[in-house]
Length: 275
Image 1 (cartoon, rainbow, N blue to C red):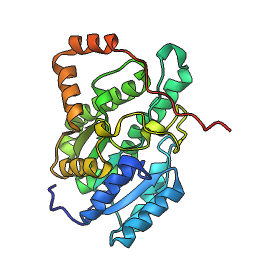
Image 2: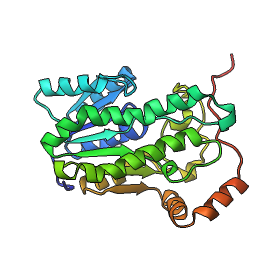
Image 3: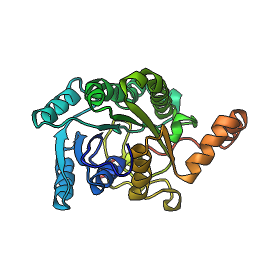
Image 4: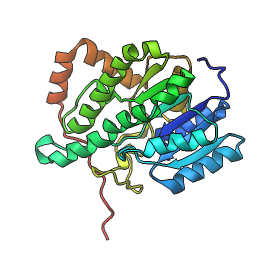
């Protein structure tokens, strides 16, 4: 699979905004058909309309990765049109934040249900298609899959888990001819930091990460798609993510010491506007 690949079909979960939408635009720009999956049907259809207006091929499918069978239905809808995904991007996710002792067991369950079990549902519901096309399964990880910061244990745990899954899949899928790419981004322009611990979006909330530290979504999407099409096993996005992952891999004790010493708690959970 190379940059020149055309007429491929890419299925993307969590495609209604942020990185998912950015990936959809970049794959479509390269001449590939995109199947967009997310809970927010209105935003999803608006994106599909935008891509079709630009000359692309796009379909919108309302689906929730926390619901058994939703991705099976989407694959069936594509099959009915004679379409089989070549690339599947398990992108849907959000972040639960807060001091572990102040969170509840339900907070952790909710985090894993989307970020970890959602990746597993996407995998099991699409792997037959990928075996037929000898395609590629893409896991959206995070720099948090390498380093767990105070106030971010649920999210980090979920991303450590999907990184472990991606690593194991390289061997598990070798004889099936299916490739695997793990994407590990740092701070990217997206809605993730505007989503509360229950998965609710607060669009009015300002991103707590300064603009100078965030990579633009379209730039990040170009890097991700280039790595996917080149068959890369891992794509680390943003310079700061590369630095953090280097320290986590090679200087874990120093990294842990610095994190605890500099602990300022988690980023604030977004809240509703006061009436």
